[in-house]
Length: 271
Length: 232
View 1 (cartoon, each protein chain N blue to C red):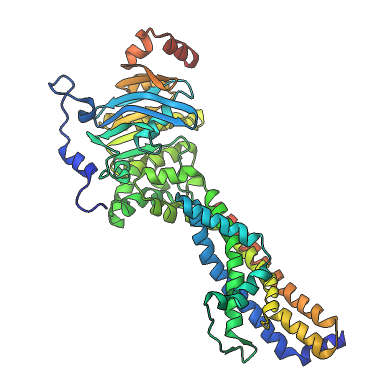
View 2: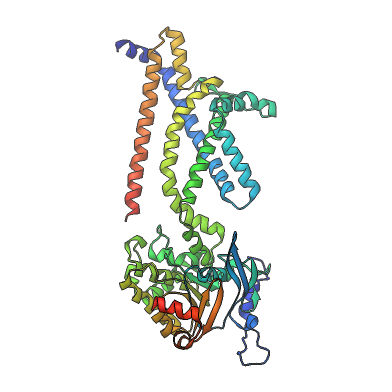
């Protein structure tokens, strides 16, 4: 797209992350996604104030917090659906605001699953899945369909490949949306309250698919109210309130040991 | 009644050519209006401020002025700004090309303003989540518009466009003012020749009614099929 030079592609080639304990470790260089001092306002409303979130490769991060705390905005800043007013998103150490870093290339590598699924209603399930691989990755149709079938198998919906989304249940739609995002072979997956719009009996099937992904080593950043899931699957739980990160630690610490009063009050209200 | 039939038989050739011209300019004007209207709609929703303003001003001005004035400017005024339409006989001498072109341009410019709003409404009625989902997959803005938004918007737009075409057939009667021999013009001609001040207009009105009635029912039929297929 930009001829030879492409910072995001270079980032993939040059990314050799150091461990946190290594000398010279830098969170913005050695994390797969580093959100650095992010500020975001909508008109007069300040939603994010100087938020740092560094996510090493393979980590599963769950973001919790009361509504209006900036969780979703934070997530949407990471794949540039919202452009931060200040601060920088680094992908594998490359600043995404660089002129030679294409936002579309970033988004190819950072998949997203939405609360309301956002499947394309005028396309069949399979067409939903293969659109971007064919259109963006220039994959052949046969290859894309073959991969699409494998992905549908993985989310347990191969028999629905020729249905239109309107004929599916919420849980099925969300699993298709996950398969659609995975079809681009993302390095990172963002989940914006993936189960909040679902009937209770369908939450489990979606979480099950996400659990499998976590096991396979996918880097995931998940905004959710499913505390049981957070405790079981997350490597790390981040608590946001009032546009900033208030607490950040392992699930065990967050749910059992953290003494912060805002965290305790929130957990009391949801558990 | 017998007298009306007699009138129709006597001036059949004239009436037929009038209908032909009315249908021709309506069809061409709606096609021209559609092309320009889609361009205007894109100008209006794109992120370039200057284009927003130009398209917005265009729509306001066209909607706020009579179509007759627009037609007069398109025909009489064109030569002033250096546009000279080619001139030759059409429809067996029933009209000349310069008037027909001016009519198509005048009506088309008028329809474009209407169509711009229809298309813009159709595009904006599609949930923004669709755009976000497509962008989040790495699709370009153009690819998102072309593959995701427009196919969904078109289903909503087509019935309104059909109604616009139906309206266009009636609006096209304004071209009489520039001397194009459409259905309205020939009925006035027949009035003068036959000294009958009533029947020619009733005949013309009847023909306009049949044309619009058939067409608007075709639009309804399409609408019903489209909603059905959306529920598949």
